[in-house]
Image (cartoon, rainbow, N blue to C red; front, side, top):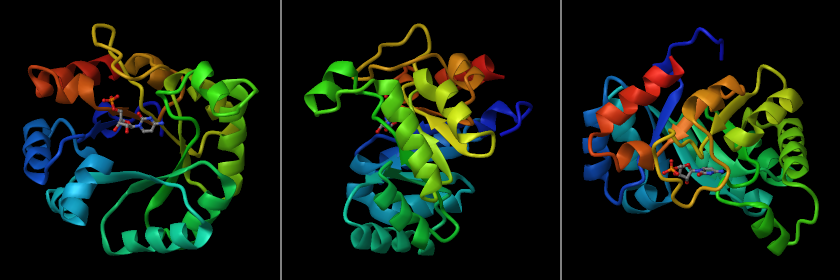
Length: 229
Ligand code: C5P
């Protein structure tokens, strides 16, 4: 995304709330400052595609973050279900077989491959059997996912610069793990500020709790937009 792109186009707010009513109330309170929203597992399991459709009907862009990771046939058929809905971005885990299956049936939706969850640190990776460095794993998953047909990558802001270098200027990079200086890290480990993420090459920053749990979500969103503006 060009550097001069307006900050509003770069912010995706994660609607991590339990019901469609809460999600839509939150989205309405943030519009028109924010027009890109992420629907994740919690919300989707309650509200399904209906909440995605309701957001799209309001003119918002939707990122569906269900992080598919299954056998190719299952991933391809699940991804094909997106075709009847206005889903701008969808996520799968960054394994070449998974990405290739999703890319085959994605239709108009762009597929983003998750490299390594931003909540994971070195120790958790070692516990999962990955002996190498986190940076090497992120780079490998980014490169192989792009080669398998991903349109972009989800990675932590700490690895955004190395991913940008690995995937080139055209691939989309979206970074969760965003924490303004004064906010709690919660369960996120590999975090950075909104400004640092964009400076490192992120097209989109994905922000949940620093906005949704703020006393005034719209104020928190405005502060973040100012920071990346
Ligand atoms: O509340 P917070 O800002 O930590 O929310 C980040 C959002 O991004 C969550 O919805 C989480 O599921 C998602 N996410 C993430 N790390 C990834 C991919 C997605 O935190 N690697």
